[in-house]
Length: 474
Image (cartoon, rainbow, N blue to C red; front, side):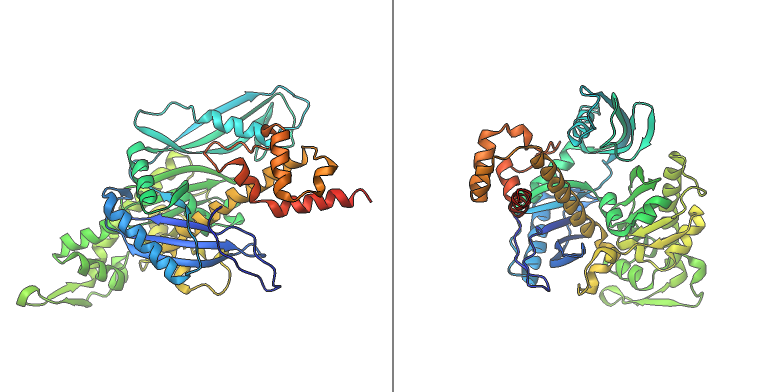
């Protein structure tokens, strides 16, 4: 990780964890948040910036130049909040009408059946799924393993350590339009950044607002954004379904604008200040006065009419959620964790009641504050930043997996005793030239940093390992 920021913890020790940046390119806002895990595993926010989004519609980048400017503005604001930050790489959320998902099945027959199953074999199984046939013009964004099988054993969450002849798994594959993906990557690169990974927005939001109990109970994460509503359904500890519903907060604003004959800015303001998702919960005699245009008479807007327009569109969105739940056979009896509402649109008054009425499931608002360290600004605990916080968590998940795989691979390679006296840099150079690089390589489907860069990031881990080796001699 090349993002840099030096900090020390309460004990005066340097925090060696990388700084990871989440970039949420949304229809109404672009947010950049830089975070680092502390010694307690909580995210410390080191920088935060946002900007209004103009070049994005329904979650898709349509105007690259406007999007670049908005990303740069968000970055400038992030630097303004912390001038010491050095940001080069970002995890980027992706959504939009073009996102689709499908289920596949994959198996491999093992050569050394007596050995325990290793991570490399799981990685090969996942890599095979990237050859799945998808329509021309689409591209695979992510391959997510669901339950594994080893020979006749079913529903294994993690097969590493098992032994057997045949390893298989069901996979959830997420695809997107190549041009839409290219536009996102181009916008990020022209803003002076490198896309470390593209992450489906509902999965990022789920990581930010969901805990282990939710995963076990079964939940539907409904992220109501500006241009789209993203859905991720988890059941029995695995991801069962993802979907992007083509309606969001912008649609509600446009409905108010057209239905009440007001300006878009007025419609947005009324929605935020006076909006409700249930018309029955509003007063009959409550009115909003809108100033008249160019000397015209002020306009009286009924709060009940406003709520009626919002309720109609929100009910439609929740009908889509119900439809998708029925598609995967998860009706009201199975999702004990109910629905977790997040995203900017989840802050509408009475939305929980409407959601429970339409879907028949319990509902609550999901806030991303569970993973945040104390002392962050209150703004960041709002549901609209769930995706951004989740992107940082996804980055840390990748980092921790790489570190774990590296340490496992390192322990399998014999390092000559003489090398243990050398500086770490020399050890790395000597070992990688003397030993087959395959022994050190962590197989990743997506392009990652060079082996040298990868090993450099774990110098401290190497030193500890050498110390352990020396200790064992005495």
